[in-house]
Length: 436
Image (cartoon, rainbow, N blue to C red):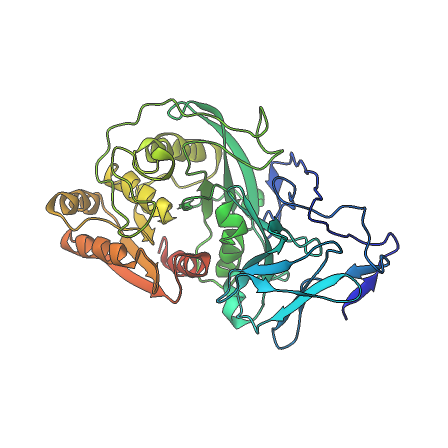
């Protein structure tokens, strides 16, 4: 079925339209809700009430997922000269859509794999979200619609209404190191946390460049992955802390205190650090003096704040087991670099370490740093990258150094490049071996 009657005429979309913002002040989100917030204003064109098409009484159904997993996308844009579909599947960019007599642009693609996909439209060169789809993700300042093709391939991160679900809280804390009075992180607590007195182990889960504290919830589906692993008995119940790995706090409108857009500058001097790593071919590569994106990607302020401020905050305000063997850290890309900086400079702090799509150095100096990490009592040093990831060689270099240092280490690959398809899989695999 292509269209559904809608009494008020339904949404049109013109290339000069715009939308509003939604402000949510709740600090707690229950169940398996992935915090897909629907904040779709900002810089993207949105549906406007004016400019109805040829039949304004028809509501556009988009996306429509067919039984064979082909997907039809539709958009009403009466005045548009060109509408394109852009998705993150193979050959998914600049797909031309065709216009019918109802001013509806459409195209059918696929079949698509069992995966969580992102997509958007381009209307006369302007990025536009799908007004027929209320599921969105935010990656820094970029928004895209979400589309789940369910099946065995996506079972790890799919929502299962029959299962017990944990809680995700948005938590604010202050940072003296970063000179910011309000920084936000998300904390996942497992099912039963609110009704018990049990203390739990903790995984500190770090995002990559361009993202922030939203990333592991909206794109990584971390809460759903942990819900499913715990329900199946494949993972021990644990807390998962997902902080903002940037040295600034920039979040969607309605979520930060102060001016709009909400930005806080960094004035803290970086602490002395050792072991900043090169990501190989990665554009995020940076040295200890801070050469990465934004100038402070790897200079050490944020990893220092993570260890000295975030971990103590969690251990003071949540029921956790506050020792090395029950403290894990994992990060992807930039977050992998932060992971190595935090662990190289604080041996004995984390008993479980995972570095995904990030590299190290196979030098005597770097191996000596990892020997100190090993002496600190690491249970497992888990390394992985996608089979076509530009950081694959750097990850192999880190693995070689970890072996030379005598660490209990393992190397993993998954089909894919530098993207969430790979990292969701890694979280499922690493989460299954943690704290055992």
